[in-house]
Amino acid sequence: KENLMYQITRKDKLSQMDQETIWDGIEAFSQTKVPATGRHELAFVLRHPNGELFGGVIGNYDNFGWLWIDSFWVSEKLRGQGYGTKLINQIEQEARKNGCEHSHLTSFSYQAVEFYKRRGYSIFGELKDYMPGHSRCWLRKSLS
Image 1 (cartoon, rainbow, N blue to C red):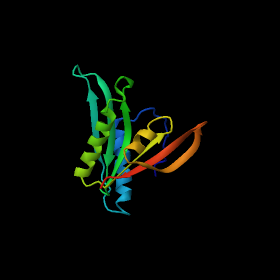
Image 2 (cartoon, rainbow, N blue to C red; image 1 turned 90 degrees about the vertical axis):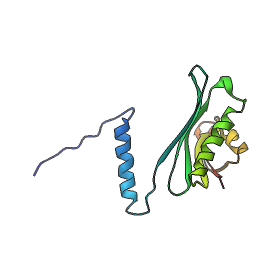
Image 3 (spheres, one colour; image 1 turned 90 degrees about the horizontal axis):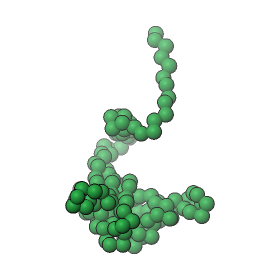
Image 4 (tube, one colour; image 1 turned 60 degrees about the vertical axis):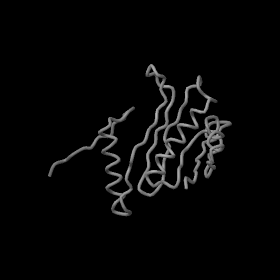
């Protein structure tokens, strides 16, 4: 019998292959309990005609009708000009086309909570003083 010592190592950034192996492992376990969850990546980016990146929204949706917005950013140069709304509308619209009825995300009180609330999201969870004076908020929205 072989005596193996498994090792735990710290990684600052996972390779795409390692990330997919972890997701596949979660999915394989989940399928023993519920139907296939699925994971379908979505991303929309905002670029200048010269190719420079000025914003984007990254997320994914599952087979249960939920969009997860993981990351969202618009350059300070372009804030307040409607690009953020267009990016959010694009990812929500694509999620709807793929059967999503709900969206959820997390944001800090000093970031985009008010922006999301103006677009129909509501807070369903909050950790006050996640850092002194600020909260981490979980928000959701019905897409139907």
